[in-house]
Image (spheres, rainbow, N blue to C red):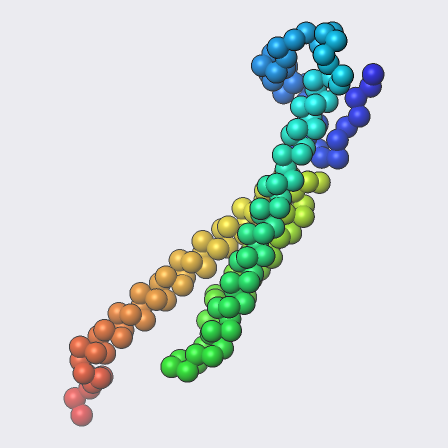
Length: 160
């Protein structure tokens, strides 16, 4: 019986991987009557089917993040105390939306090309970390300047 490769480059087990895994999987000899399919084919199918729930969760996480970005963008547009500048829109809406969209793309790529999907996930998470650090710095700066202004009683410190 010839083996048929599965649709993913990662789910078809290499000979080295199989030599490592096979002793742990086969409690019965492969010639026993209980086996209807080869153990290697069953293992390949299990590895490939394990990616489906991961892709679903990754896609849902990306869609949830995109929905949250929409909420943040709507609140940013309605802000009356401060008029957002281009940098605010970029770091609170555009870049996070790009990162969450990349997660949805990674979810679509995962079953067919897991290696590429992992690079997309890595890039999206790196982008979210950079955006988070930037937004945290902006918040700390704004709170500090606000407290200094309150302490000085709204004076700018000029002598005239």
